[in-house]
Length: 123
Image (cartoon, rainbow, N blue to C red; front, side):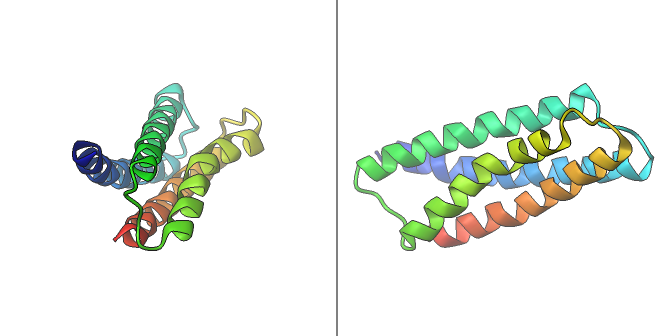
């Protein structure tokens, strides 16, 4: 299980960097008054897949007896991290306006903060 733990830790760094990039890219697009496009939504889909893979590795660690110090908080934040951006997408109901781009950008930056908090609860 040690390799899964190392991958889980490394992937957490990838996730927060990806959310930071996604948020900054979204802000750049929003400031330039651009709408949400397929490339941006594709990146949102990629980070969601990565979050699910991260959760599956976390589940394997849990079953192997490797649990974070603040276990319940870590899992609650993780569950929130998996449902937040799909919830934003559902809320927007296919809106691809500049306002939606602002919402995705700020939501991604919010998720950056959430991911950093998830990492803090793991140690």
